[in-house]
Length: 191
Ligand SMILES: [Ca+2]
Image 1 (cartoon, rainbow, N blue to C red):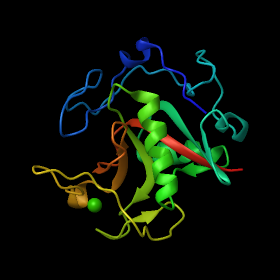
Image 2 (image 1 turned 120 degrees about the vertical axis):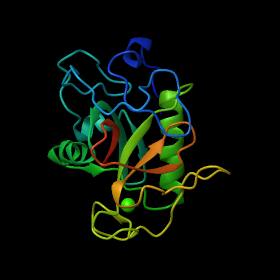
Image 3 (image 1 turned 60 degrees about the vertical axis):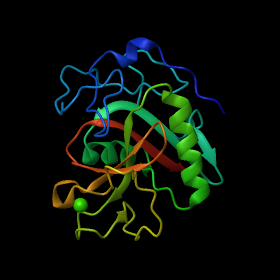
Image 4 (image 1 turned 135 degrees about the vertical axis):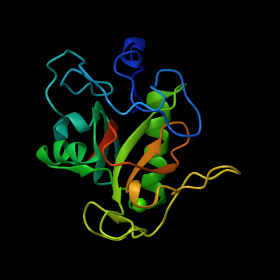
């Protein structure tokens, strides 16, 4: 299923913090506070009225399905814990890409949803229990990684300050981030 292009207006309201390597159009360099946001879920491909209800499993079918799970990008700025709670309240979790196929699906979904922009989005991976021990929200240990790396930056690089993982929408690469940063997020639901 293809993502519906988002109205450009959505990119000008309450921009989230930028990724570290550069400042894409529409984000807020260094910003961590997002004020005055509307408390609604603007689901990709879905209804974007101000009182759109939170995603349900049926709503997730507007996202991206693979095997017995589906992923849904939620365009609401939340810290990691808030995002996980909102996913959980609807019967899911933050996205936990379990293998290369699922990660590739997420990467394409993010890219198609946000291009030509670059937006970070939370997934359900953290190292809060022990530094450097990356776990899914399920508690299972992450067995493969796709950290961003170039000649200047090698993720993860935040140590004990950055314990939650976001994916960049342009390339799907992983970044460790401060868990309190507010950004879009991706839920997953079992079908
Ligand atoms: Ca860490």
